[in-house]
Image 1 (tube, rainbow, N blue to C red):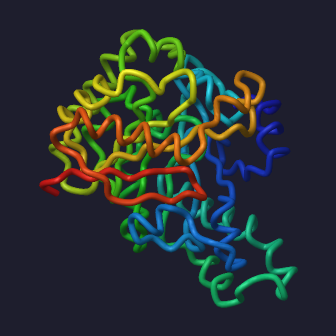
Image 2 (image 1 turned 180 degrees about the horizontal axis):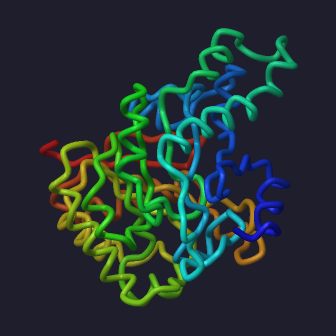
Length: 305
């Protein structure tokens, strides 16, 4: 791993860990807010997790895309993947240590936090494997999910869908696939893949969701003026995918994306909701389920769930 890139991540408050430094953790804003009793993540509202006990991490800081809306600093490309990878048990253990280190600063302001939540946060029970990079590039992802599950964790994996062979192997509590465009042409423009046949791979990954035992979620990150078009095409893909849920969520004008987009690309909550409703008009499978205005996200649910 490039030491320069690792240093960039550390300056951005990532805890890069492991013997080979291809994994990282970072405190989610909602974890901190929950510990301070200032609100909870929409995932707590939608899926019942505890925001203050959620560990946000990735086992792979490499990615096969350069999405224009990505708030992360672009990581190394997949043509320079490590020849050797850290073992799943090692990543699990180091991720817990990393989370506790990241949380330690909050312990210095006891008057501003919920002490019970802070103590519980030191023993996380939910992992969001989605922080940066693409987790399905880590070759032992099924085993890593298994390690977390054996330690009593619920497991959420967020993927770009470019590795369908790995999507086929994993069964987390919630499996997310990103759908950032309604068609091949827009996907190439918005997600800017570094690999061939990217759209075909995503469609293959989406086709696997209906066979999964646990919850599956398609996430649409809405970028105003870029991909908030062709709701009928989104609806067709979603109806064929038949995932348990669909999240339509606003692009946020933060991080590295500010060099590529403008604040006008960040939709307001009512605009996200309006686009979700447009998709529903063309869908025979989904209905409105819930929303959280603070996160600018709307949840759709499969009717026969």
